[in-house]
Amino acid sequence: MMPNPIYRQTIAEAWRLTRRHKFLWFFGFFAILMNSGVASGIETFFNNVSLLANSGDNIANVKQLYEANTLGFIASNVGKFFNSITLENAVTLLLVAAIFIFFIWISIVSQGSLITATDTFRQGKDVSPEQSFMNGTRLFWPLLWLNLMKYILTIGIVIVLGLPLLSLYLVRGQDFWMNILLFLNFIILVPGAMIIAFLLQFASAYVSLKKLPLWSAIRSAWALFLKHWLATIEMAFLLFLIYFLATAVLSIVFLPQILNMYVNSVTGLLPGLAGYMNVSNIALLIIAVFLTAIFSTFQYTATTLFFIKLEQGTIVSKFVRWFGHWGNVGEKQAPVLKAATKPAK
Image (cartoon, rainbow, N blue to C red; front, side, top):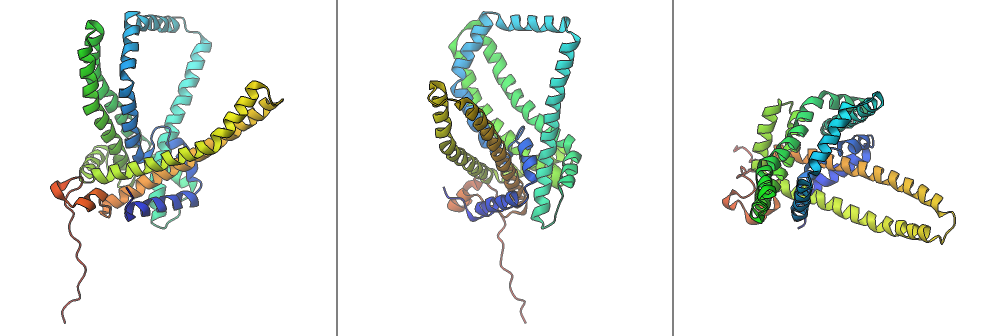
């Protein structure tokens, strides 16, 4: 499926902004820690399908842990740890918690910085890295709640669907309950998690660009998604496909060298290769971080531009253009734009 011109224009403009404003790469690297733009909806879909594909083995492992009372043993040891906690352990826990909170904070701030900076650059205005950071800081709390709501809702669906049926399976050992669980997960969890991921992107844009309160942003995001759900899926799939192809190309470029050096190092064919391996691993890590930052910035920029064009009504799903508005599939009927006519003399 070839992307329509609007999609191509959006992707080209996103790449131009990404290439031209390199300070956005810093925000892109941290933003992807919690979110990856509109493509996260497709990523969520594939992740959940993969999880369901392996769910039989996972549930069997949970059953073994349940029968061996492993979870109770772990809980008992955790309780003993906190009852006999030392000052060193407490400091370590606080340090780990502080690092964890810092990465959440910088990821949320980076999301807001990317969204607002993309809109500013699209208007032909300039914005400094400091101003972008301040804009992201101002949007921290609403974007934090939106990100948390994504995880809470997704986990909530899993708990509501999974715990009762999983408990019946663990207690009674009947495969019927496991099959029901897998079926409900496929028809509810997979599409539900994907829709939640899409809504987060639109709600974040409404909060950042339209200055809407949290609940108003969520309602507007839902209305926008209902109107353009098919175009949203198409754009998300296109960005995911670009990511997949880029990853495949990079793997083809770097993997042979890595395997060759690893084999030579293990077999001892090249003396002193361990030092080269360490340098190579560090170089590859730097390259990976660099490319991750660039592509994350590109995804967020493309997502923001896509949202703006949806709001302006300039994007129509390719499937809708192919098959018309039969049954209002994927998009509500758009008003026909008539060419301006000259007034009669």
